Amino acid sequence: MPLNVLLVASEAFPLAKSGGLGDMVSAYAVALRDANVDVSILMPAYPAALACAVDIVPVARMTGLPGGDARLLRARMPGSDVTVLLLQMDHLFAREGLYRDPQGHDYLDNLTRFASLAAAATRVARGVRNLRRPDIVHAHDWHAGLTPLFMRVAGVAAKSVFTIHNLAFQGNHPLALAGWIGVPPELVVPALTDERSIEFYGSLSMMKAGIVHAHRVTTVSERYANEIMTPQFGHGMEGVLQAQRAKLSGIVNGIDTSVWDPATDEYIARRYSVDDTVGKQACKRELQQAFGLTRDPFAPLVAIGSRLTEQKMADVIVRALPELLQQHPRLQFAVLGQGERSLERAMQELAAAWPGRLGVQIGYDERRAHMLHAGADILLHGSRFEPCGLTQLYAMRYGTIPVASRVGGLADTIIDYAPHQTPDDGCPTGFLFDGDHPHNVVHAMDRALAAFMSPSSWHALQRNAMNRDSGWQIPASNYLALYAQLVDARGALRDARALKTPDRQTTATANATRRRAESGFDQSSGELARSA
Ligand code: ADP
Ligand code: GLC
Image 1 (cartoon, protein in one colour):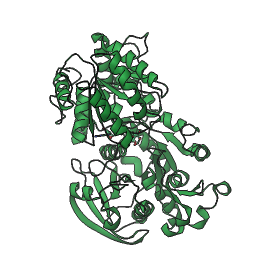
Image 2 (tube, protein in one colour):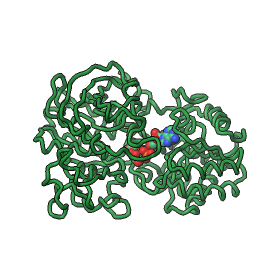
Image 3 (tube, rainbow, N blue to C red):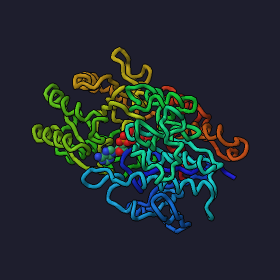
Image 4 (cartoon, rainbow, N blue to C red):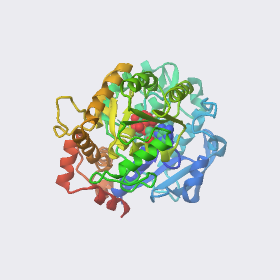
């Protein structure tokens, strides 16, 4: 029998997505399926998920979840045959937003909503007719954080893994509600007196529940795994994580290389590849047109595509843009994002002040995100903290060179082009900077623009970036090795066909390129493996 893994998450692209979490869950599920793992995703039956999932059939009724009764539906993810289990509780999940109302206020019953998801996961782990019982339950972020706790309380045999995608969002709620959702009183005593307590500075923390009660905890890059044990990046959780460090590790995310592939992408003006990048010019023309920028094939075109929040340093970028535009007369920016209203407005005001040079589109648009990566020369990606970051991985695959903060997964996945280097020396793929002052951004951009002026340097950077192995094979192997520590490796894992030898996550393009050459793996054979 193949290993059975249940992924529990609030998001899975294209059924629900607010950011990288949704991309990660779906792409990882496909990678597990390709490794011969029997994998399903359990998530809420949001209206968009019901509209998008394929072959939906009811499989079970569940009564007495924290939020009441539910129907469990089984379906397939569109575009892959990964099974998705949809938890239908329309009074909790049939709403416009995933976590917030249209005014931007968190739903007041988020605790009940996601405690219900965790309780349903626990029922599936205990055994539901018509569903195979999982060996591993892998919960993601605070939305699924209560799962390991409920599994422990219920004495479920399956092992639990919890992945932190962003420690800034912790799912903290009044402690007094613990009984209401079924958390035993001994697990909400003051944390100082009991390490298993999920009390966190006077609140109940769903994130802490995942960290403390899972058998293993991972996060989405090695560097972030270390950073979150420090006060600067720990969001108050650093002490908890230090105490749990023996079971904490970092595994850098992969990306879905079939969704994000300039050679096959249907969203972009003309397809291209590392061996023939001519089509990128047409993509650049299209991007300039779509964002109201002057048509200029030689203008360095910088993309900014992310949530407009302080995490993403949008406040700093807004202050750096005028200086950059003044200093570099041909420089252009295309900004796609949404987030804090004041930052959205500031971006729009800048666009009005710099017509033809700075185009801003506020909103969420998957197609435009593809156009952005395909058409730009540079991706500007500031972050005060970045657990992994997928945007820079997408950009690199499209030959768009990232200029990014030296934090978390950005530092783990981008190799800095040091000024004294040649682009063939150490395989640099982008530019990293420290700090969150506008002049840090301006200085890093100056370095990138100097390299842009030298076509041979720039093409070498593009080649390095496009050749980076950002697929899921290595990360999936690392997760499988972690699962193997928890379940009988000779039994359930016997059939899990790891595509590569588990490996420490080395992110150097040099190593990735070498690995690819040694294994004979190339992107086209990777795609064939996926569709087989
Ligand atoms: P985070 O999850 O912290 O926002 P990631 O880099 O991991 O950061 O993932 C962001 C994801 O959201 C990427 O798939 C990116 O393309 C997408 N994204 C962010 N903002 C937008 C937007 N305005 N329109 C379309 N896609 C967006
Ligand atoms: C979170 C993080 C981001 C990461 C994504 C997927 O949204 O902010 O850095 O890439 O999760 O793991």
